[in-house]
Image 1: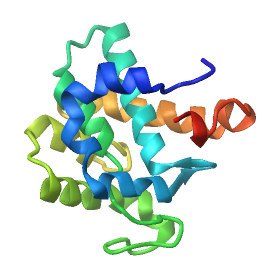
Image 2: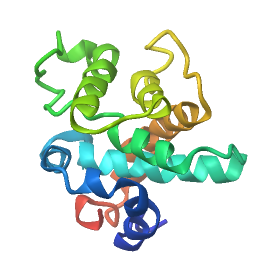
Image 3: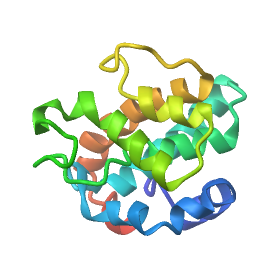
Length: 167
């Protein structure tokens, strides 16, 4: 897995369902915020979408592909540097508890979301969110988010071929 996300993968798998998201300036602004290690929030969301698709395929969940991808791409749509806090974030150390609601509020403002997409965004931090996901898409995004985080903080951070430049 020398390049996790390629332009071809974005074009083939994500663009048919997420074209308006990729053309949104607020979404693109996430490239400036670091999420894990050297990875931006933007690249993390691409990783989560990639892993969510893999989870759907391997486990044969039969997810609504559009809801799965949009929920994955918008799950961390909080639009600030969480290391220092932002509007609605009470304290950087509590970010994990509050950012799903902030991300959902921002995503709902900028995009027409369905219930599955909202559930994926709102509950992706389970068990911190207390109430577990209620649909397959939200479960896949929740698991993919953990997978992507571990990958970004371990494998990718130790491998010079994985960088923002390959995203």
